Length: 505
Ligand SMILES: Cc1cc2nc3c(=O)[nH]c(=O)nc-3n(C[C@H](O)[C@H](O)[C@H](O)COP(=O)(O)OP(=O)(O)OC[C@H]3O[C@@H](n4cnc5c(N)ncnc54)[C@H](O)[C@@H]3O)c2cc1C
Image 1: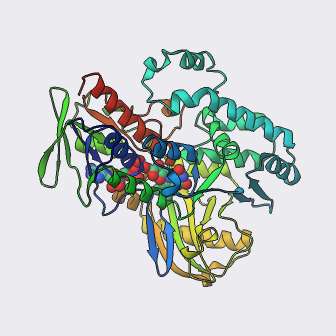
Image 2: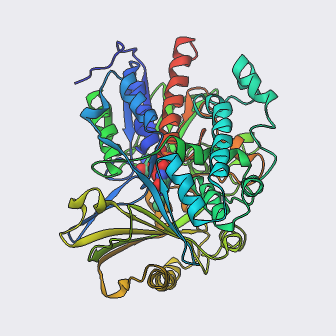
Image 3: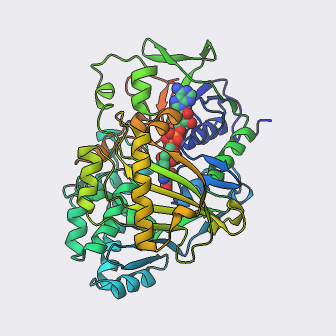
């Protein structure tokens, strides 16, 4: 049953991929009156935001942390729905618990004053400096969010309105010429606090020693705006979007890979899927853009978009899903065990392209907020370390080696001997991420933002080369991570609607 807010407009759009970006684009296009068909190569929607059941344990397979929930709330509102009927989002009182090799433990509380006091109590940094840093982070967000996040960036044309032009005049304030690390060190001298804020580069798979300080907006997003979890686990976001899409009459073909996107005279007219050419008026591509340009869209190599696609991928990860016997009272939902040599860790990942020998370990335990994710007296540990993108390393070997490192470090820092307590196990490696979601080299967030300009050079949501072709997802504007891919789906569908209204489709 189709209940879109607009009458059918007689145009058909095909969405390639049912990741969170593709699902959003499909919903918005259907809501605007398009007939929407989604082709997804996997058996289920959600892409990287998946879920796996293992011997009585449930794990979110990819994302574990949700920020900017208002982006998803707005999507439901735009569609005339109350999000609470689909997804229950809970703010967390503590976004993370940080463990350092020297024994320091810092609790990152949601309450800013409490967090700043905690930093002052545990390190040599004054609470006022934490506030000063978070104010600086907010300033960058206020100056950039409208232009770089909440609208489809159109290159130089994007600066042709008053607010955007002001951003241009304030380029120094958005701090694009320093690296994240240089900026963080200008606020703090204590290495532990520098490490804490440098870590936010990993939220888009980048290197804090290379990425522009503009990305220091991320602490604002987490500390000032807060972190959230859906009551049913992160995968519930995909379920909620899928449910809404079905209500809007979107059709899904799963286990169906799109092999080609066809265009003639510079305009899209079909895709090849399910052994046939499937005709349409437009295509929204949620596939990784490198895969899209190299496999599906046969554009001349001279085109700028094609030249860009082989820029460095963002980092990947090794993830261990462990069913663990016993309850760990000293851990929170999100926990970080920092490495001793942060600079070297990123050198290993991005330059040597090897898994770091002293990795920072992230532990996410969803059974702490959703007890049914583990049998009684047990917990579901999602243990992740950052890893280089896939360039045909022997991941079985790397994963086995890293497992020992992780178990040793957990024993050393948390005083927990997991070896006897793991009762179920599955492992995700970069090559599997690539195979399962076709993400370029198994990267988590598309292209990395290392270097001064990469963050600003993502694939735009509307193709500049082919009419009727749009892009969404982690490798398109505005980038990877749940809220950003939802925004990208929004932007792609808005561009589609704009083109329809201006007679370009
Ligand atoms: C281990 C891990 C941890 C992460 N942690 C976080 C986190 O804590 N917080 C956060 O916000 N983000 C996190 N992310 C990133 C986040 O998951 C992604 O940015 C986001 O889910 C990507 O959405 P997407 O729309 O780009 O689609 P994807 O999830 O990349 O899905 C694309 C879909 O398209 C399908 N597809 C591709 N090509 C074709 C084709 N030719 N034909 C048919 N189907 C096709 C794929 O099968 C896939 O289902 C993490 C990711 C991973 C892997």
